[in-house]
View (cartoon, rainbow over the protein chains, first blue to last red):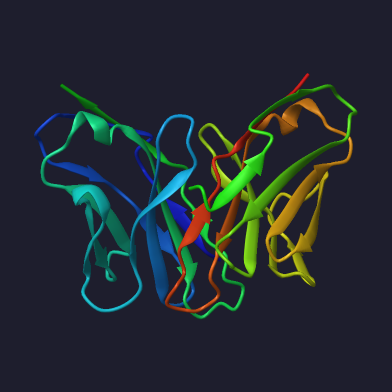
Length: 115
Length: 114
C-alpha cells in the first residue's frame, strides 16, 4: 500500500527564519516524490519533485527538499521564510514501479509565516 | 494554471439534483484525474482516465460518474447530489512518460449541496 504522512497540520514560523514542512511516505517499491502548494482560492501548484539522482532537490520560490531513503522522508525546506510563503502544502508519492501512474497525497500542512 | 480550466468555478445545488463539472486542458496530456478536497483530508482521487477509452475508479467513486469526451475533456457528474458531496473539486492532467510525472491542476470548483 502507498501512503503519505504529513505529521503537522500547521507550521508557524517568523519571517526570515528557516522553515521545514515534514513528509514521510510508504511505498512498496521506489518512490517518485512531489511537493505542491495551494494558495487561497487557487488550485495546486507544483513546487518540486524527486525522480532520481541527487537526494537534494531544488524547486520554485527558493524551496528545496531532501530525499532520505533510510528514513522514508522528503521534508520541504527553505532557508529564509517569507510572509508570501503562507499557504497549504501537500506532499505526494507515486510508486515508481506502478503502471497506474496515480499520486497519493498527504493531508496537507498549513504554513503560516508571520511578520 | 490556465492550461487546465474548470467550469463552473462555484456552484450551489440542492439535494437530489444532477450536476456536471467540466474540465478542459490544452496541455495535450492523455492522463486526466478528478479529486475532491475536504479540510483535513487532503486530496482524494475520485476517477482517473489514461486515455479516451480507459477510465478507472479511484478511492471514492461512489455517487460519481465521469465521461471522457475527448483527449482534452473530462467531465464529472453527481447523479443525485447529497450534502456530504459538498467539497472543492479539482481536475488534473499528467504526461504518461516516466520522467514527466508532474500533475497539473485546474483552479477548482467549489460545490455546495444544500
